Length: 287
Length: 287
Image 1 (cartoon, rainbow over the protein chains, first blue to last red):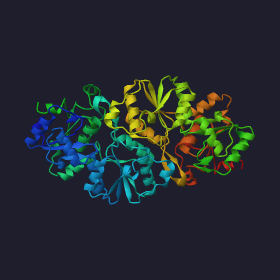
Image 2: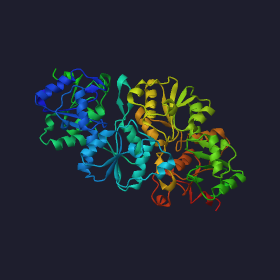
Image 3: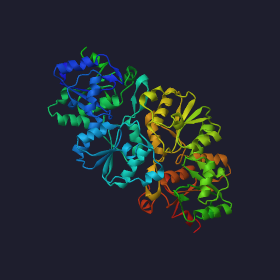
Image 4: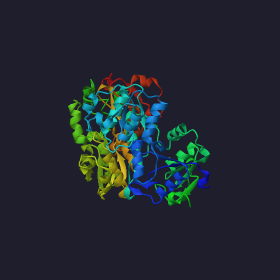
């Protein structure tokens, strides 16, 4: 199959268009060429630390062309959109994560408070936690990537869950780790989600990849998209390939991120994670 | 069956002999009577925050009679004993938890460093974490209850796991929550374990209840114990009753802790969690 067979290109970002702070050679040219050809280009990321507007700057910083934030589907946006459109949520959200989540909630008209601010960014003792005045307006706890995750934040989530009837748990994504410079992996949003799920003895609803929520949002916002002519480009089998396949698109795996050539010599046991196509790098898309 | 039919009484503590800061009426008298009758009395707790020596004071503070720390099996002790006797461990332990774990490791001649101290009790940025000098002598990460659990501690565990070959993960216990004053539940050791397991993409070996390690340690240290004449007294089905049943003892459930009378009206689906006997409180043991 060839580039001409697709109208819509959905790119994962980290590991595909850049890797941490490093550019991936040719990524910028490939995206520019696709946009010049009039293709629909979207960016889909589980990164929940930034709002879509902030993410536009990040994409531009990596010299990837983008028109505006409507081309971006991010997990912080997904959390807000899910609450607004699926849950018709009208209460307050308690957020464990960085500002991207709160900014997206605000854009969607949803009131929120961050666990860090509520706890005055300190660790609390058990007696202090038990005396904590739970906010009766909180109806959901949203958990994303949080470099300042603490026991107290998880306890705060658990207390709200126990005191506020109907309060539920939402995760922006559940990636256990994320790849960093030097080939090292650091804890991802999924680690915080695991702590809070245990503390609340409750499973989180997940809106990030590989769940189909962002795919459905894309289709809802762009009813004209023909899925037979859409392709998901990513570096992870269990998130990106699964996400694209479950969403009904074709899938293209690149080897510039998490998945190595060695890995592909082993069998892919889950058919949902099998890529339609494999290339070394997005730079090779037109080869 | 009657008290006379048992020589060995193994008590869970919180929810059985006391509840948080509150005494359970009659608990002190019951234990005193058993010890006066010459019964073997042991205290088995998943609490990892204190060493056995410190736990003696806690037991005495609740007016429960105890001779010395050899009557105590705690999960911090279990972690140290497992490393020493099962793993013949000779490297250094990285500890995520309170001082009880480090004190027990020291008693067993095992060198340790706490994640809090290693991180100077602050939260680190990603670049700082990636530059962190991993200690090559660390061969295990031990995770227990930690009120000061942070993302950075979990990242430190993950970095050591990736850099030190053969490094493994050990949990003192995996209780997701623990009951506190006012009927509220706060996050337990299991929540931190879940975060670290996700971050390290690795399952922890668990030595706390319901795993049989502490039961085996009890039998090893006291070869004369006749299991047919031993009974485990606890308040939780999925830890205490399971622990006692798997260990080959009889089991006695009390209703002063986590398990309510209402719960017992529902079926017990796992036979391993079924108590041999049920009484309202340890105060009723001689009734």
